Image 1 (cartoon, rainbow, N blue to C red):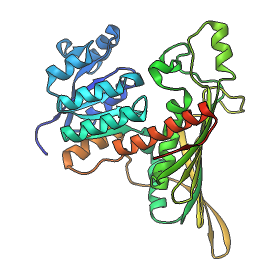
Image 2 (image 1 turned 30 degrees about the vertical axis):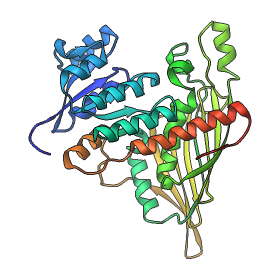
Image 3 (image 1 turned 90 degrees about the horizontal axis):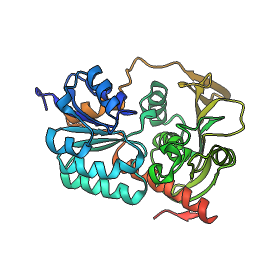
Image 4 (image 1 turned 90 degrees about the vertical axis):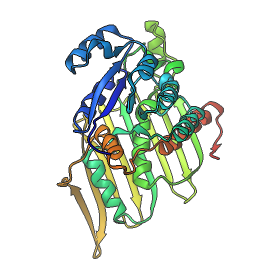
Length: 350
């Protein structure tokens, strides 16, 4: 594909602002329409990104019907991912959907079926893959330096970090869950991606609301999701993965993120620096009878954003990563963790 720029639309101007800038950074893409029910956001970001008033929509489905777009980003509360994706595929668009893919795996399967029927792409914005430390680690793992990976642990804890407390993030009807579906989804995908997305066979999980629940009741805020979740996943190849996520936990750090993989030839650790959003990675190996610790200092290979990568894949006709199929596996695991937490029993994955 060449010449004509891809016409892009973005639905949701909270997270969607990054989508606009990401698409516009590619020479063969341009955001030409935006949608959000918030009139102030429409005016502010329409002006900022030079989108004319007639291409700003309060109604996203109206935008999809009218604008004849090539690519659409869905960056709304989780409840609206599936219906908007189905509408976008019906309109002939490729779709980049924010994580999580949907409210549950059943909706995710509907999205995949619609994409296949429309012969359009579906990518999930697992943005933590698209960081230099993550890409560097992926290349190392694929080189075989870790050998057979048999255990992983992936964590995102916050001491106190409940997004928009009292807003849609804390409402199961709109979000589908709490920090597991908000934060844990990123760390879960990152670990699975580094492991090569092995086939899960069973899951155990627990959820808690020891801090946010009482606080919400005291402040009369609506909050009916967990503030901490933990899951244990067993794979067909014998490997095990532990995932933890919290918005409120009595820990030292304000923000604590780690992903650790153990293999029979080496191990790796990715972690955040200074309780923030910069990352480093290390590997732990044995060489000539010596234990060696290696810190990855970064490569000369530029890491594209998820948005740039999606456009480039469409333009060049190459496969994209963070596929809808992988998004569905993550969704199935999230469903299983929540189901296990509710029943107190392990859950088999079909």
